[in-house]
Image 1 (cartoon, rainbow, N blue to C red):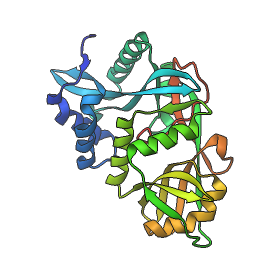
Image 2 (tube, one colour; image 1 turned 180 degrees about the horizontal axis):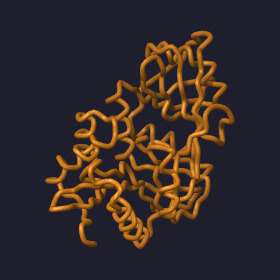
Image 3 (spheres, rainbow, N blue to C red; image 1 turned 90 degrees about the horizontal axis):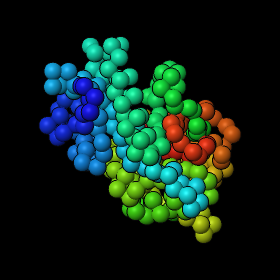
Image 4 (cartoon, one colour; image 1 turned 90 degrees about the vertical axis):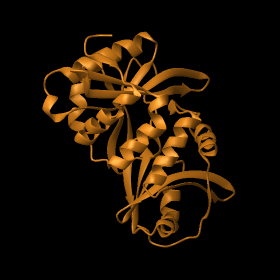
Length: 275
């Protein structure tokens, strides 16, 4: 490997937690849970100085699917550097190394910048904006009953793949969905199905202050509005906010979902990327 860059080992986890905590607002218990559940299944690249990691980025398996076509991909996630080591080029060197290594292995790459101000930085590395979500806010006007049942990660993934198989989308393994469900539960969330007019739909949601945050669903905006009261009542919230695919929604705040590198598909629906 290039000088200063290598794959992280288990012994590095305390240092990785320190880098993470210095850069993001997550609690230490959550960071430790992330590594406990994911470290052995992902690649974590680090830039080290004096045998100590100071910068890192994680690469998580995924694939971009469109009909029968499936393209191996990697989500680059939680890339960051200790504050005292920023603006010295180490993260850029790390990213260039990871891009070269993963691209040579045939992977399409994608990421979601933690701040829109970082988009231009990643564009300079060769990434291009590709897909968006719409964040809508719904204030319930009534509570219309809805029948709900819990979903296992495998069940959720099966329904998700069926719902999005008609378009280019990020397809995840059952193992990754297991983590997403556990992460959602960590934040007091639930992953469940609802039945409307004989059809079954999925929802992943968690409360945040007075709002119910819906991370993903295949309900339409009209259906969400119709049953928003029951969903808010289920979680004890006053209103809900939902991340909706742009192809299914033309209202609300437009939020970039992914920047892509070396990706042959365009406008790929991307979600469940540990925003």
